[in-house]
Length: 122
Image (spheres, helix red, strand yellow):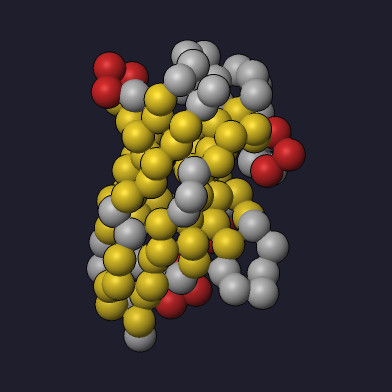
């Protein structure tokens, strides 16, 4: 069983920064890990993922602004978000893949956290 718990969301003004954290328990060794988000009335979209070799994939909308990282010793995944925009407002979810290989699509991920809300005001 894999459990994921996100934290670090909140409300910020446009141009501000937040760092999201995801604490993982259970077997996550050699799994893909990533962040997705979903705004009200919208489909869930991939934000940025990290495969088992440390290779990242990211959405064009966050290029140059968001950075995914992990601390394997602490079993924690992070998402550093800079230069936030109102369109970044969404519920953000941490996810773990079913294997070492993954693409930036939710179908490649098997385990999900409860989400943490990010609200960016203009």
